[in-house]
Amino acid sequence: MTVNPPKPLIRKRRSPLLPLQWSLDLYDRVSQWRREDFPLRPEAKRTRYPLRTIRYWWVTNAMLDECARLGRPPVIADVGCWQGILNRFVPTVEGARWVGLDWEMQSRWLELADYDQLIACDFDQPLPLESDSVDIAVCLHVLEHLPRPEFTMGELARVVRPGGVVLIGFPVLPRWMSWLRERQFARQFASGQRKPGQHCHAFWPRRSRRLATDAGLEVEYWAGSFLVRSTGSKLENHAWWIRLNQLWGAALPALGQEIFLKLRVPTGDGR
Image (cartoon, rainbow, N blue to C red; front, side, top):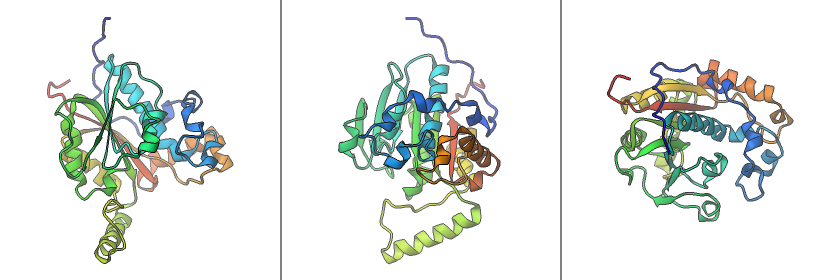
């Protein structure tokens, strides 16, 4: 079988309105998230476009775009696979190899996912993957739990091949609120009210981008996600409501509740 070479890389940062180019019809094509054995609140499953799953919708679209660019089956590292939700949400990518990593394996749910390999590991230590061995690394709602997010971001950059992508997402706040939140976290850790593994960092947009660039990654896209989420609300049956939330996140990412970034590992060849 002839494999087409990857399409040229795009060096300039894409518009934060990129999600508006992605169809919400993906929700109709993906059926697993409505199943009884899918770890999602029942009231969310009764709506057509649950904002609680928008992070998986975003990553899925970014991932499918990258698979189309590659022209070959990708190696995907789900760093923080937890219950295997992302693996079950993404439509089947023929020939893809999925590697799931987390500090503790939720076997009840992971048995329903289709990972080729599962690895238990500590994200505050080097990732147990070879350098330049992954095409797409996904890290959703993990970095805010880690004592050294800068270290882990560097590890994500290390394991992804030149030209590959890192897709990350986590809660976002304005800078002053993030500063206050981290002070609160520090006091709670000191008093024993907060335990290792709970949130210990807060991010604002500029810190998010700096986290990527300090690791040598190119920021190709970033934007906030939504204004308000009310799981099970009838509003989540309407495409206009989802698009309105995405416009809010694009215009005011610090108030977008969650921020998503698509990051590129430089090729070093100037392309």
